[in-house]
Image 1 (cartoon, rainbow, N blue to C red):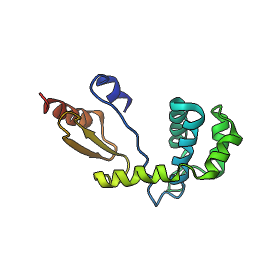
Image 2: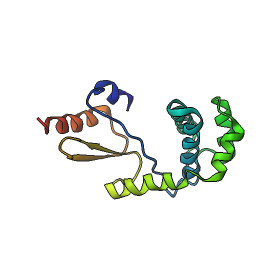
Image 3: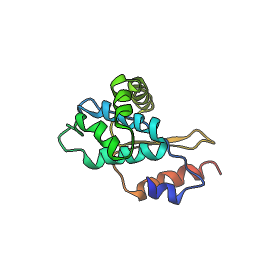
Image 4: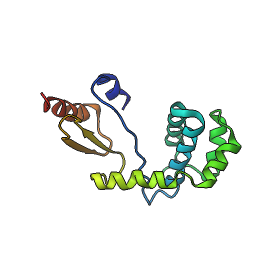
Length: 148
């Protein structure tokens, strides 16, 4: 996504939505944890936390161990006790589920799922799976050309 944002910085806005799949046992809590990181550290903390989760997640659908979510926050400079209280409260559970519901309604059925929208024409395309930059570029260029 960084490459896309660098190439299209004046034409593209990227919005991240959670989509915790049921067969990834810890995905819901991991998503909630990233929102707690955002609450206490802002956008930069959200991305550092999210990137760390993805980098450290083990294969096989288990995900990042739940008992390591609060210590990771501390490692990234957040207050561990505040973070743990936020996570244990479940205050972001509905937010995460609403993201998933919205994604499903828009046609996303897996991760990564991307929806490219021309905000002038409301025309959109879904890009499913991990695809190379060139594939995104083609779709973005077509949508940008459609409003000319």
